[in-house]
Amino acid sequence: MLTKRIIPCLDIKNGRTVKGINFVNLIDAGDPVVLAKQYADLGADELVFLDISATLEGRKTMLDMVLKVAEQVNIPFTVGGGISSVEDVDALLKCGADKVSINSSAVKRPDLVNELADKFGSQCVVVAIDAKQINGEWFVHLAGGTIPTELNLFDWAKEVEKRGAGEILFTSMNNDGTKAGFANEALAKLSSELNIPIIASGGAGTVQHFIDTFTIGKSDAALAASVFHFGEIPILELKQELKANNIPVRI
Image 1 (cartoon, helix red, strand yellow):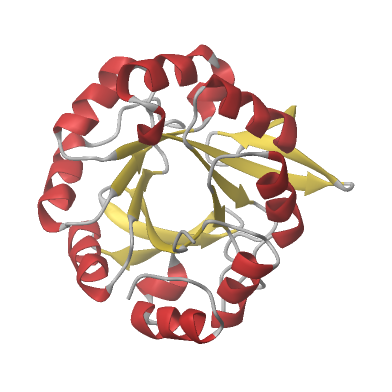
Image 2 (tube, rainbow, N blue to C red):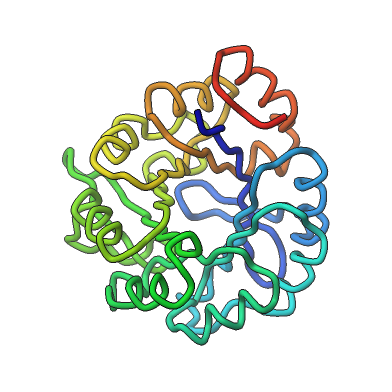
């Protein structure tokens, strides 16, 4: 059985790691380069580095920071934010990123998923989907959750899988930063309807939440930020608890 992955997420704004609740009220969580090295040393399986205001501000991800982070880590490393072309991805991979995460740009131009998968391979392409449950239906939102669309989460996830995405990173905007648990019902549905890995994001607050997303939500990986940034859940202890609950992890 494939091991389940624990992935700290570094949301970057103005060169600092930040964390908010429901995508707002951001507070400083430290230097991303320092945090990245700590996580690699502490047993994280992968890292995700998101320049959260790049799309909103219409600029590209900071290549110099990607280079510095990549120099510090020996685990797979995904970068997202402001990516809209093959050239953008080529530059990021040359700076040391292993994968890229695309979100708003994929919705605006779905062919981008095909182009990146054809050029770099599906294993390199993560499609991030920020969705909000409204009256029982999940709707995709763009630009860091600021722009609602009428696109259905499950329809969009299936489409990007067909277009060559290698993984889906699903963030529940309803759960994000609440520490009340992941959106396991939606995650289980995604896992059952797709054949590519699903990364759960939004809502981690306790070790039990991670256990639940791997068992109830059928997630392949769990991504979190504040519980790791502020030392609330040490990664090694988390993995030991997961293992004790018969969830396969790399320790």
